[in-house]
Length: 155
Image (tube, rainbow, N blue to C red; front, top):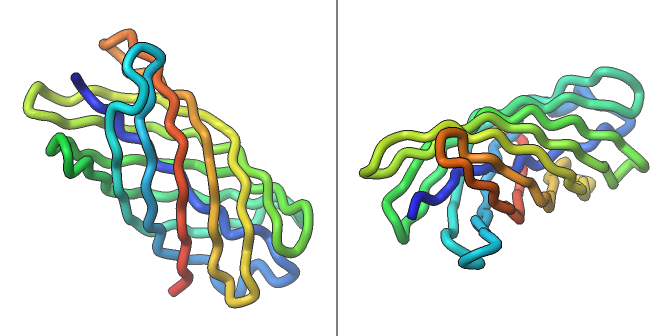
């Protein structure tokens, strides 16, 4: 059993003043779900992200996180490139591609992931996001689903 690492990146939705707080610390968790076995692993993660406005309603949020599955001892890094479209001052719709690595005692496997998400931005710039990504474990020929929840706190 090799769990997959997948991060979901909370998007700090584009509000009226996107340059106020472009850097956040992200903390969250996600599950690894297979069709054959159901929930296989639970991960926690943390790492920084930065908000880069692309237009009035569209933002790009790159993030680098470190992730761990306490139940299996697996860990890894994830590079995420969230595109956040602000539908209102507080709500954003996200597309979240990611490139990750899954490291276990059996070795390291690269993983490609992509999926939609949604973000709510509170008045104090704290954001809560949900995401559901499909992920492909390269070399293992395995597809998994990764639902997750993220909290982004500006600093």
